[in-house]
Amino acid sequence: MQNLLLVLGGLLLAVAAIVFTVVSWGQIGIGGRAAILAGITVLALAVPKLLMRRELAATAETIAVLGVALLFLDGYAARRVGLAGADRIAALDYAALLIALIALVVAGYSRLLPLRLPLPVAVVLAQFPLPLLALSETAPWFTAALVATAAADAAFLVFGHGRNKPATVPGDAGTAGPAMVPGGGLAGPAVPGGVGTAGPAMVPGGGLTGPAVPEGAGTARP
Image 1 (cartoon, one colour):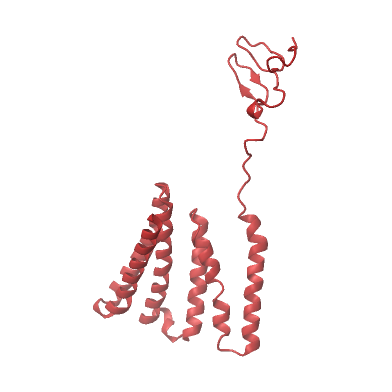
Image 2 (cartoon, one colour; image 1 turned 60 degrees about the horizontal axis):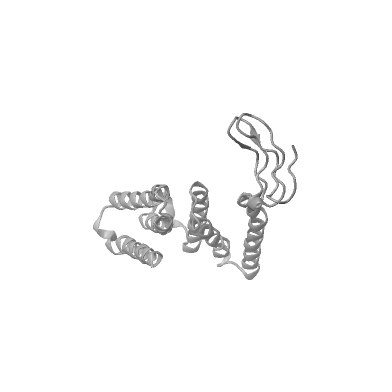
């Protein structure tokens, strides 16, 4: 239920940002609009770090996805105001370049914070730039774009999987290292559940005892 409320809250914030960008576009000057959108985007991408410190992972994921949506609105705003000649680029070409740039930003962002959603979002976004660039070209070019995208996906699966594989943590069934006991000595390795033969143990005073043997299973060594 909590996750559902977070998703709905994120969607409402995204809708509010879209309405502000599209509908209220003529109510504020160019400098003010750019500053507001840039400030909200930076804030949305910075807040998840603070939320992760407080162990609010679900909220951090929601705000991070909202930040990604705001990056698209920033791209739309840049084209509307003609920033760096963006309004002179063809619509499909601009969309492809914008999506590629956002995919790179989100992929880098996923390396900075231990969030689950940014990297899959970046992978999904990376599927669109080449097909969009080749959409207005002939069929062979479009096919080549699809093949190149598939090859990039395969390379990511082969090389990225091993790099991002989590480290293996020994389970409870492994052999524990030596432990300290009263007297300053080292005890032998611990065996889970008392199964098997225990190593020599130190007793108070620094002496060594023989291996511990369950009661009634035989005579302990001197």
